[in-house]
Image 1 (cartoon, rainbow, N blue to C red):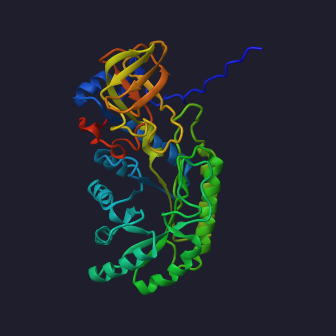
Image 2: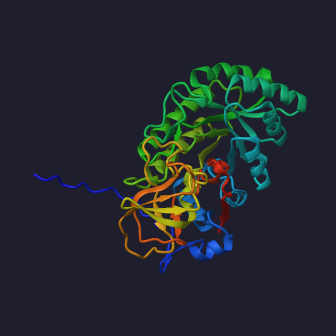
Image 3: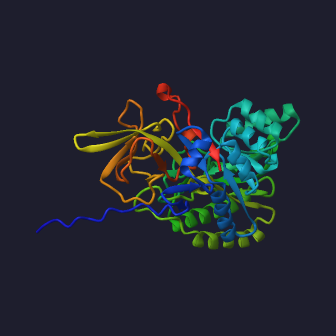
Length: 414
């Protein structure tokens, strides 16, 4: 009996971008023309119309009382952050450098929150002076903030970041449950809450972030519900009313074959229930959802140019001027355990039939420099433009651009 070949799962359709003839359109511009406008390859391009559409789709399902924050770690390109300021209710930062980007982009300090373990005293002082909300990650931070607040004559605005005793199931990165460097263990939070008044800090609420990159609505709903209930229990022991409750995010986008887009319906319904309940239990609290890649990831592409077409023992390699030094995530070296391909296309041959599987590689002297492994793509030649979809998040700033001394990547908002 012969083996029956199994169907190979496909990537989710990258239908957020349209085409004109054989050319992919980004920001309404044909890709080859955009490359001329940028003046170089490789480059990242983010489509501002897609950013607008993503936020609008979220607003349709989120309850009115729910604020939407953008976590700029996903993509801190200044032009993009400035655009997001006009779309979202607040920004979340993870360093004093990101805080400066947020302030320069025009976001008001009262709508910026600062999270992350190991904040240096200098960063804490900058944040207190700016007036942003600090998510306290340890008792040491709280005590350091007390001294800084006294020195500056400004009580630090603080929320306690809680490490709950549960995790976001099926998430790409689990950021809660068990021992974690993030936040304060839920069972230790009451002790810190009792200490805050003596430290002279202005308590404003709680921050819970269970995990990221999740495509299962049921898992996100469960984590949000548990986070809300935990925050309500902790609020009973807080030194003042909860003014801000950040329930985190975790919304994923489909990167790999077989993945499908997240269903927002159940999440919106659950958040509506939380908002209704919070009107009674936490009447002064601003409820916040904090999202990064979900807001910007699908709106961006990485574009590089084929430099050489090589055949090695019957297999075709498309050698490009881009690679892992610009896009570490697409190479599989940013959190993947087993390497899987991002969706890839030949951006100036979109209407042409797929040929035999080829590998798309970069110019670096390492076999890890791989953007697409044995993918069926149209017949490509030197000069053609390779497109890596789902590249609006964790791209240039998450990659080792100085590795081997190749030119830096450009970034544009179109």
